[in-house]
Amino acid sequence: MHELDHYIYPHRVLHWLVAVGVLLALASGLTIGFMGFERVYALLGNAGTNVFYAGHKTLGVLLLLLMTLRIVTRVAFVVPDHDPPLSAFERVLSTAVHHLLYACLVIMPILGWLATASGGYPVEFFTWHLPGLIGEHPALSETLYAWHARVGWAIVVLVVLHLCGALYHWRIKRDQVMTRMSLFD
Ligand code: HEM
Ligand code: HEM
Image 1: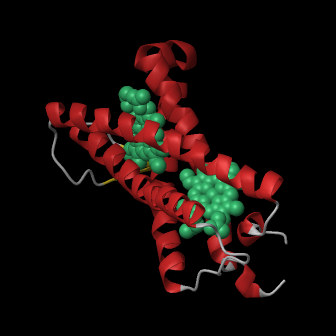
Image 2: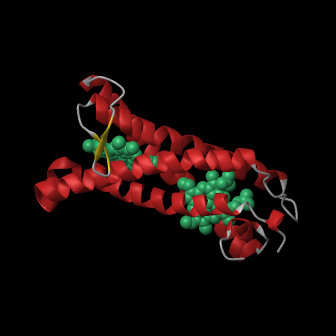
């Protein structure tokens, strides 16, 4: 197939790296959200809890880096035309979901970062501690964590809508939409 039938290859790689990363970040984050620190601690012990939290933060910061690269590959390179064209409804809905996903996936790690720092906790990235950027402020930290949870649920809803759209194009309409993002066709 001609190259312009696809997003450029680096953008496709970034799409699938972010897809896997977001699912892992949601799974680890929601585990913390549902169980709470105490039950995670009772289950994993001191070392395990530290690794679990540090893993979630590292993944979140990696997603922020990947999304920055992805915005560059999205803005700097031509997006292939849909052939056949999408209906007006499909175009408006998919564009809205894609833009909201982009916005949420940039806001989410920043909220996590600032909530962590203002709570007085380390912003861990692998074995490094990144600068907190804001000072300790427990009340602000609580508000930022609350928004981290809300935006997390918004991402869950957007990903479900996105997956419904992908499945619809791939299995029902059987058009070229899945191929545009495929690493192999
Ligand atoms: C796209 C990236 C991220 C996603 C999708 C994500 C997702 C989530 C979700 C869904 C929760 C559960 C919220 C709740 O129900 O209370 C959570 C909790 C948490 N996140 Fe993230 N997160 C991301 C990035 C980050 C980053 C970059 C950090 C810090 C550097 C971070 C630190 C935390 C912490 C400490 C909690 C636990 C909060 C608590 O104790 O209730 N997250 N995350
Ligand atoms: C795991 C299952 C997934 C499948 C099967 C899938 C499939 C696709 C396909 C076929 C496209 C191309 C749409 C077009 O041509 O306009 C696309 C685009 C897109 N996907 Fe996914 N996707 C998945 C997961 C995700 C996840 C988890 C995210 C983000 C959280 C995401 C974010 C996006 C965005 C923002 C676009 C718009 C194109 C761009 O600018 O990158 N996808 N996806």
